[in-house]
Length: 463
Ligand code: GLU
Image (cartoon, rainbow, N blue to C red; front, side, top):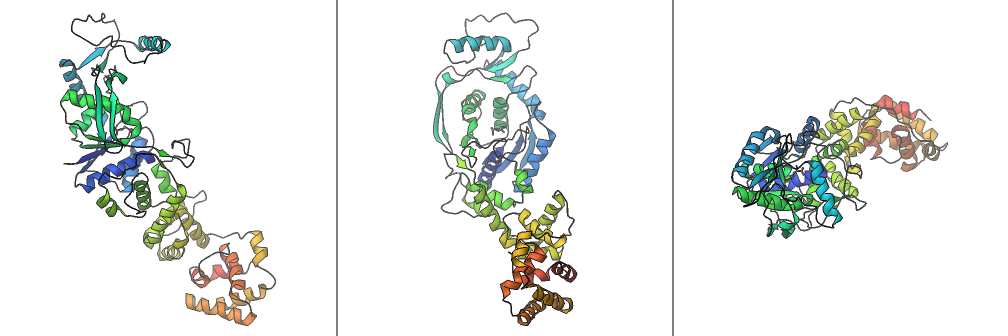
């Protein structure tokens, strides 16, 4: 049985990198008919917040990454971790260490001065014939794992291929802190074991943790999952995406007017490929995603491509759904506009969606129907000239009395052109500028028909 998991720490929003790993883990499980688990790694008590948990859950649900188990909270599993710690101590595979942080720092400093690696010196590690220091008074111990002192740890990484790290590079890891809370590397092993995780996909910043984890799996006699470490995502400046450098939360993209299917498509393609396919839906992703063709090198975040993907999905999106999204975008603006997501807004979305790459852009168009527009002075001077003013009046007159639908509005425009001898663009441009505040719009009769008559006449009258 394939079981994958995503294990975010609720110390901030769901990062794009973690979202992508979640997506790969989810797609892998779905592809093989397995299960996907959500685990919240909240052992960093000082930095974990409920708000982050909520954001993570909201982002998962927005992306449609449904899970078969979870959310499982590590802080609710402390008894289990402590039981495993006790077992390791009893088996001589872990030990109490009473070195104080000051002592440890002093030893590290001395090693640094000699140009040596600053690994733990093994002072409290029991060994046959070794006398341990006397237990100091009033010092609470941490628990350290007896890492094998030599040999190599090798695994065949699902993304990066074979990786070998020498045990001489790593030391006896702290697995439980003085307050009994386990550290990440230990809790993750107990959890992946208990939750029968078969495949671990995560960011490659964890590669150096993997040897410790493999050693602990082995010490516990637990089956090893397979590991796949995905490279980081770089910003468009080539630097690692970070909070300071353009990395925003998944929820920020939702608010920014992106559709979840666009995000899913873009994120999946960023670091994985299926031939030349750039646009694919959730079902296709699940069909194709078998764990191969994951990129070994970092991908670069490309906001322009993301917009292109988003525009594709906006074009395809159902108008009723777009109307709802546009309505909530409008209510979220600094000067909120309350708009019913009714058939009129649906028709507006239908007419303008082809030219929009976010629902914010679509909301900007929609706003012109519900709020007054301010044509800019240059465009007014350029288009609303003395030559066209009489024609604008004729048109306004005809629009006063015609039936208010697209064919009749088209006929009224034609009549005004015939009566004044102007060409279509000469009249259409100023009408657009006056009514919508811009000379570039879809076909004029279709646009005007979506307004009510009074608004059009009032705006035309502002010559
Ligand atoms: N809590 C870790 C993180 O957010 C999980 C790493 C893992 O998947 O093992 O990076």
